[in-house]
Length: 219
Image 1 (cartoon, rainbow, N blue to C red):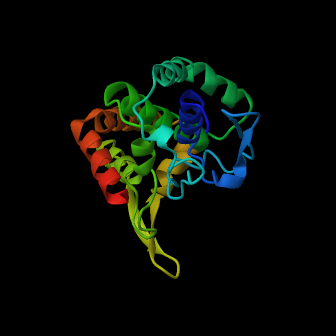
Image 2: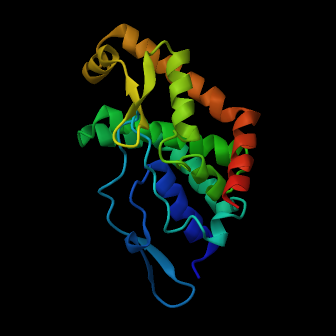
Image 3: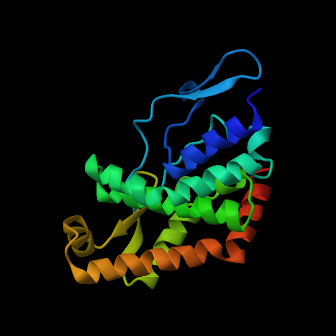
């Protein structure tokens, strides 16, 4: 059994980086009981912010520790992550991590912040809103990103693609070009509007209600 704080810390990490490959083989239990959790293989994290369609938290999603309310240590951990986010982004910029990946970290950290510090949601409930329950259909988080795009005036839409017509999120290429260059003033304004809209969506009581509904769906 992994201690409560350790288990919730793993969940916080995977949620923040939108891990798309946290299967049981990438989470090792080490040492004597109570085991320590050792996370390995982080090559599939921080996809582009418009590609949040394949989160995978299978290694811990069924653990009882993540069904429990956030512990005091977890609350402190989330507060620290939020406070250190500007410094973290500066370091990632220095390491030349793409801007689209940095946005994903910002989006997921904001969601974790509001879900834990505002709504006191269990980590499992938070994660369930980031996972597609029906592969062709966007998850809750994807819909919030799409809504924030609309609120910010960023042209975007879901388009059916592939053999099974899975809905894939597409953002207007003109915005992505300006976004990549990072110089257009209108793109900078859209960025501020986007994150402001997203914060409002994440902070709403509806977000908390959706999390409870997701938990009932997975029972």
